[in-house]
Every structure is written in C-alpha cells, then in structure tokens.
Image (tube, rainbow, N blue to C red):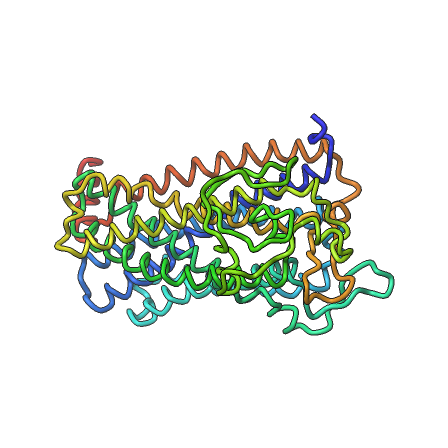
Amino acid sequence: MDIFTDPTFLARLQFACTAAYHFIFVPMSIGLGLILAINETRYYRSRNEADAAASKFWVKIFTVTFAVGVATGITMEFSFGTNWADYSRFVGDIFGAPLAAEALFAFFLESVFLGVLLFGRKRVSPKFYLASSWLVWFGSCLSALWILIANSWMQTPAGAELAADGSKAVITDFFAAAFNPSTLVRYSHTVVALLIVGAFVAMAVAAWYMLKGKHADFAMKTMKIGAVVGIVTTCVMLVTAHSSAVTVAEEQPTKLAMMEGMYDDEVPPLYLFGWVDEESQEVVTPFYIPGGTSFLATGTWDTEYQGLNSLAESGDWGDMDPETAPVNFVFQTYHLMVAMFGLIAITVVLVLVFTLRGGKIKDMKWLQRLALISPLFPMLAIQSGWFTAEVGRQPWVVYPSVTGPDGVSLLTNDGTSQSVSNVELLITMVLFLAVYTFLMVAWARMVGRFIKEGPVAESQQNVADGALAKEGE
C-alpha cells in the first residue's frame, strides 16, 4: 500500500499511536492522584485503620500507573529529534523552555513527594504526609500545564516571530507564547477530563468489589467519592467545553468546519451523528439541531460561519485543500467525543442518585456492571477529542491561527525528518508494539493483583504475614 511508503504518514501514525497509548496512563495517574489525596485527607481526619488501608491501596495503584506513564512518555520526546527533526528546528526556540520546566519543576516535584508517600508514612509527620499527597497531585497537574503550553502553541502560536531566513520561529515574549489564546482554555478542558477518568476508575473499582461481595465498606466509600468528584467535574466540563468551542471558532475556522462537515458557508447545526460524503461535500444524517454549533460557539442560534470551500478561496488558508482534507475523520471523532460525554453524564447521575439514596446501588447489579465498564466512556472521549484537535489542524503541524504572528506556521510535510526512511519507521513501530504490549500486560497484572488483595488494614496484614512465616517454618 502507498501509505506504508510515505515517511510523513508513518511518522504521524507512529506519533499518534505512542501518544494515544501514553494518554491511557496520564488520565488515570492525574485523576487517581485526586482520589488518593481525598482518601489520605479522610484518614488524616479519622485516624481510622480502614481509611489508612484505603489510602495505601490508592498509593499502590497510582505508583504503578505513574511509572508506566513516564516510561511511555519518554519515547514521544525522542521522536522530536528523529522523525520530526525539521519540526524541532522550527519550534525549538519555543518548545525548549516548557519542556525543560516540565521536567525540572513538575516531574521532580511529583517524584520527590511520591517517594514520601511510598516510604515516609512512619518517618514523617501525618500533616507532612497529607501535604505530600496533595503535592503529588499538584505536581501531576503542573506537568500537564507545561505540556499543554507546548501543544497549545502549535494550535494558536503567539509571542514569536519568523526568523529573517524563514527557518524557525523565534520567541519574542515568553508569557505571550506560554499563555497563548488557547492555553488556559485547553488546559482546563483537558484536566477536567482527566479528573473525570479518575472518578470513573474509582467507581469501577468500587463496583468490582460490590459484584464480588468484598470490602463492602471500602466499596461504598469509594463509590461515594467517585460519584461526587464525577458529578462536579462533569458539570464543570460543560463550561470548559463551551470555552473550547468558542476558541476553536475564533482561532481555527478550518478545524471548526471539519468538525461539523461544513464545506459551504452556513449557520452550523449540531449533528447528533452522521456521515460526511466527501465527494458530494455534504453530511448525511436526519439527526441534528439547527444552529446548535452556532449556539455553542457564540450563544446565538444564527451566526454564520465559513465553510472549507470559501476558506480555501479566501487565500488565507491556501495550503488547505477541501478535497483532501480529513473531514469525515474529524467529524466522526468529534461526535464520538460528544456521544461519550452523554454516556458520562447519564452514568454519573445514576450512580450518584442510587449511592446517596440509602446505598441502593449495593443491590443493583446492572448499575454496578455499568459502573464497572464506565471508565471506557471518558477514555474514549479523551482519545477522540485529541484526534479531533490534532487531525483537525491538518495540513499544518503549527497552525496559522487567526491571531497568530504572520508567517509563523509549518506544514506537516515540512516538519518531518528527511533522513528517516519508511522502513526504519515501520521497524520502530513493530518494536514499540512489542514493548508497549509487554508494559500493558505487566501493568494490568500488577494492578489486578493490588485490586485482588484489596485495601488490607495493617493489623490484618501483620496477621497474614505471621501466618506465612509460620508456614515457612
């Protein structure tokens, strides 16, 4: 197939696969960091042995997930210097600072205090240990900020100018570059999504124990925590989703047009689902809300937006060809994200209502099973949202946003390395697949073992250790 002889396509595919795999563990580590800190706060207040066991349980789950997330994230940074060498030369003056700051400030902060959680419970004061649990979560959120600063600059460049020879972007204002038009909007939207994942993973663990009839008290407490965090973050998500839609509409009109399959100027409806016929340039579906996307972006139902054809004809987006643009792909991933949010909202409301109403969820097997699979909903929403964001800015790897500096943009085809062949890319993809499969199996086995053991109180653990010692004698 021709696509497997195209180094640019393979470089994009490799980065997409590694990023998607990495972003299985990032949402769980950041989301579960909050669950961990809440449980440690509960123990600090109660000094109850069962609450201590719950906190230790989440420390173990968090640590394994964090470790795999770090390992899978390193390969992405290596690819900047191999597959995407020309891209790195273009953005190096911009990207150096946030990526260095992520390692020096956020990662070290998170790692140091995670060490306290793992080895310091009996060596530091309870108050310091509690503070460490919150600092681990804060460090993970800070890490996400620096990464989102770098990624958002690719979407909406700012605080830079094109070098005299046209070879690279040169930073002119660090704070303008760091807090470009989409940074805070995309950061808040992303972090809220990650916290939803943590809440739903907590609910899934609680549901598993309910189905198995084990650790009933821990399961109910965990289900309540997950449901409360889930409903709060789901409500906040409505606000961040609106802000994100507004930013895309203002800064990235070609992306908005692809998200709703608009080829011609129109008041964009909000499609529930459908299929974009790219040959006839129309969306095939009877299910839509007239003016719905206009309302999300502007608060009015009658704002007209340019379609891909008129955007291309304007000359401002001359490198974008409506006939080859990945319109249907972006349309499908965007609407999958929206559909998953609907499932998220329904699930968390049901779990919250039947958990707080006398703990009725304990007798509702169907709702326990729904909670058990529920982490798939935010995970699919996150992955499809990232595909929408990244594929939607094609054919640029640095998007020429509406308010961006003149000339500061880079086509994807111009960002790949000229010295990496398609054969080398295929070989590394196979190797990544092998290593990542091993890591996934190892992570699943360790987490599965921790869940099977459950939140064991220290006194119970001492009894079990004593029994094992006697058996050994």
